[in-house]
Each structure stands twice: as structure tokens, then as C-alpha cells.
Figure 1: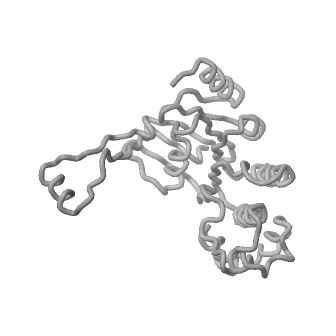
Figure 2: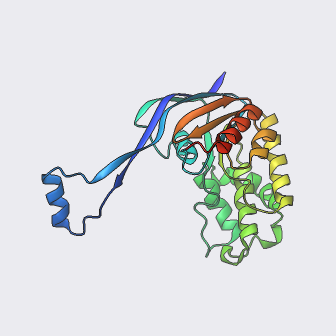
Figure 3: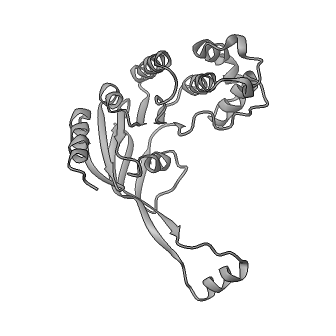
Length: 247
């Protein structure tokens, strides 16, 4: 059974060539229909399926469309064409800690962040201790977030997010931050969630993580699908592409 199914998804952006400095210049441009921009296709006819409980990796060079694709799946962006079916509640880690307020305490921020991720205060209260125990920050729960180190900040954000029991998890370079110990702990937690049947889509530059963690992968280049299949095959296709300097 498919948790995610995409059929010929395309997404374009308009890139302006010059800035209209005044309102009058902008109005003149509209009247004369002088639209000084070019269309940039971030995604072109992208199709794939992710089975329920599967772990799907997305790789490619910077600017290949990986993060745009993840934002489309998270419904932060909407495609210009194609169709998409998603079965299950989606939680996205596009930016860890979005909604955190530096002037508030860690405790207050956990309630705010979990609310953004779809949890009620009552639900958050039930997992509150687990969040701080996993993050190893219990003694800092009353400290303002502005006094946290970047590592503490990441641990709190990640721990909050992974304890809300999502059905579909979207992650953008979530393992690229933190030290080695936190990386291993995070990976163990994610693997535990996989065993519980959570469907996952991971964007990462870490080819090792993709091969170790994912059951299937996709390679993007200039917004188009270059390769799909087993992670080892897709990673090899990517390395071959890089070695030949395909652009």
C-alpha cells in the first residue's frame, strides 16, 4: 500500500531580471506587459511512490530540487502540474526549531513547537518528560532558549519533533547537525520509528546515511528524476554522474 504517490509533479518559479524601483515603473511594466523575468523549473515531471512504512531517500547536487520536492510533499509549496496522493498525517522537519522563541524557556518552547507540529497541550504534557530525557536537557527546562548552545537547541527541537508519533515523516538534512553521539542516538530513534511503521522521506547529502537508512532512493538533477531504485544503485549512479561532470 502506497503512503505517498506522485505523478508527473512539476513546480516552477519566476526569477525577476531587474527590480522595479518605483510604483510607477511597476505599473508601467504591467500596462505594457513587460514582464521582466524568466521561468525556472525546480521540478519537472517527478513521479515516484513510497510504500507505507518505507524509508525513501532523495539525493542530488545543490539546486537539483530536493528541498523543493520535500516542501511540495509537506504542502508548503503547491505544484503547477501533476497529481499527488498522501495517505496519513504528515510531520515535516524542513527546519528544526521553527517557532522557537529565544526569550522563552525551554519548557515554554516545547509546548509552542509541539503545537506547531499538531499536538494539543494535553498530548504534549504526556510526552513532556520523554522529550527532555531524550534531549538530555531536563535540568535546563527553565532556562531561556537564548542561553542555549546550538547543540542544545538542536537536541531540544529534534526530540520534540520525534515524540509526536507521526504517520509520515519528512526530513531535510536532519542528521547534518549535532555531534557524533547525537547523530547515533537520533538514527536509533528514527530506526525505532521505522519499526513502528512510520513512513519516512529523507533528503540528505550523506550518501552513507541514505544507504544505511533507506529501502529505496531517488536521484534528482536539474529538477528531473535521473535514477530510482535500491539505494546502492542510486548512489552509484550519482557518483558516476559526478565523475563525468554531468551538468
